[in-house]
Length: 393
Image (cartoon, rainbow, N blue to C red; front, side, top):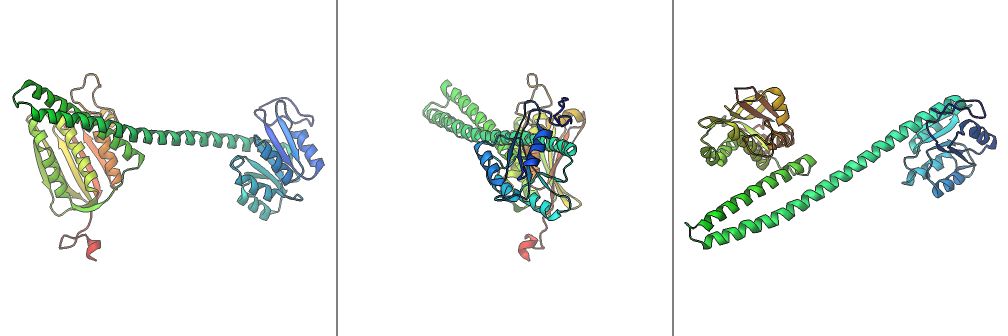
């Protein structure tokens, strides 16, 4: 706060040099306002009515605050406010209106057309000065918030454009690598060394393509741009399909996949998204289950909910490490020394899909007890014929 004194003997009320427009048809009021509100480095500009003020603002809208009487000839304060709020340059410029103390109708109308605050006549200039400082501070904080929001929205648009571009530009060359390698592979002797090399090329390209698609899918889900198309499904079918898709991968690492599902439970979910969530959870379990261990897929009822579970008998995690694993791109082990590969998107992806499906992901683990992941979903009621109850009715 500036500590010098104005000609009227009051402390300066603005924290920094401020451009202020005073609009009043009374020339004496304008002079008094200048005397009370003038301060070093700042500027107080005056106008005799709304039309003159609007012309000033249209020539130069770089004012910090406007102090405006409501009752004026030609264009009153209501008309000035309405015109200002129609102009993008003045839409957020704070305006404090002056009116009679008991004129509640005028105050209500002023707020309706865009007033920021009001002061009552007769004006207490000391109080008005502090009120202007408060309004100005609030307006500057709002401007900072709007600017930050605009930057965030622009960053989101840039991110979405970049992801779409990367998705297109990486898919095309990867598909070419895989396609041409398969053509060369078909033309070579099955037992030749070059064919074995091509096997490695194709496997690497497919692995990279899968990794990129997982990143793009997670980004789209986080941005809310993934379409969710729910269907009535039996929970047991989701579990059995999950076991079938991952059985070969489980055999490759020496882990047994087991399924245990209540055949009567139904859910209303997007089958493709839920299949992906289960795949992510099973892949995470297979990566940490010991050779000779097992991974269990289950579906059972808990009250009015259906719980789809994936549990392993791996080493388990302490609470702090488990919380870190639910964050995107973070894993239980340091990236330079960890034994299991991956991006750290398995659990975050499953959690996001559970939320998009109207449910939640619950994790339970402790050192030496493995990890149990549970997708909790609302149950979908079926009639005696196995049809969705809403459809039967």
